[in-house]
Image: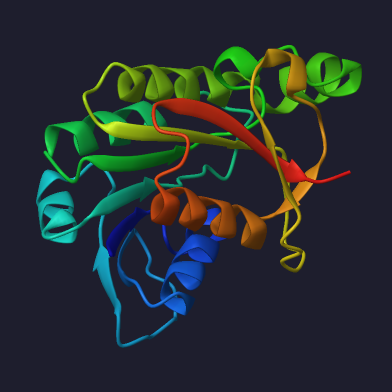
Length: 206
């Protein structure tokens, strides 16, 4: 496949790009500041995820898109997630699309344990997650073959390949997962066409 990854220069986006390349896929990475990573099957597109011209070039010939954006100050309000998602939809890219948000987005809010729901989420994440909710809603209303991936607390740890899928409000929980394992989960979803039109959590197995 050719996979366009929006937010590919760091974090989950970079981990997903590395996993895709390791599996032999072609990657088009969009980032304001491309990472210092070179590969014969990797092409960087420097620019804003909301720029129609950048999106048009990066999405050309793509079989799937992955949106894995993050903000440096998650405790502040933002419109990046919804604006980037709207721009992607306007770009008429590939039918298959994955959006990475996080624990506490959409119907996972309030189902992750007392400490996360009452302390971590309201103090650190709530304001930025308002926009993640908007981005999810835009994708869910689209005609794309979408999957929303909501990882639990992200780490920079090694890939364990022991991933638990959390589906439904009664199964969400707080926990950890490495960005490398989220990249693995995303590529499994794309290669196996899993979880179409579903929002799913991802965590290390207990």
